[in-house]
Image 1 (tube, rainbow, N blue to C red):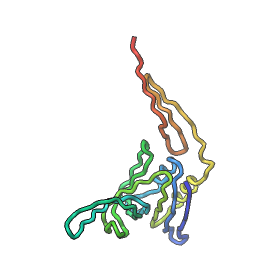
Image 2 (image 1 turned 90 degrees about the vertical axis):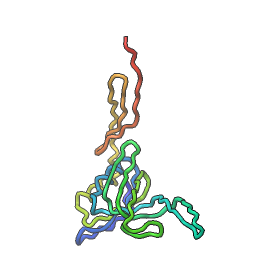
Image 3 (image 1 turned 135 degrees about the vertical axis):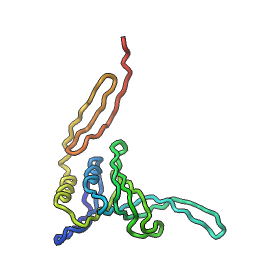
Image 4 (image 1 turned 135 degrees about the horizontal axis):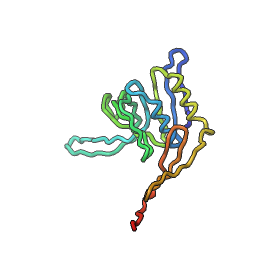
Length: 172
């Protein structure tokens, strides 16, 4: 993970950090940094915008916009290696009204910002751990049973299934 900007007050611990995950494990760290419902997250997303003309015709198109949501739900999907955040919009924009619900999808390489009312030392330590490049010591494991094998990569905080091999074993 790359720490792009850190703006945390020494006085009360409030502030924000800008991060860019470089590996799937970084998304797991981001999952552990978020605490619904007090945290807000800002990143770019696609939003479907419907326009109605004066004649009554309706057109829709997708617009890339930057949204800030108050996180109410966090889902980490290890298969697609994405982090989905749901909640209401807290900053009104040209395309999205304040309070409208939206789901942001965080992916590897996509910059985002987390704002907290109070950054605990545990969260700041987790960011430091995630930003250290020498932490990439990984172990590969193959888990097997009859007709099925999983190739997994094991890191300090997550296990990622890289391959699933299935074959039919004929019975005698």
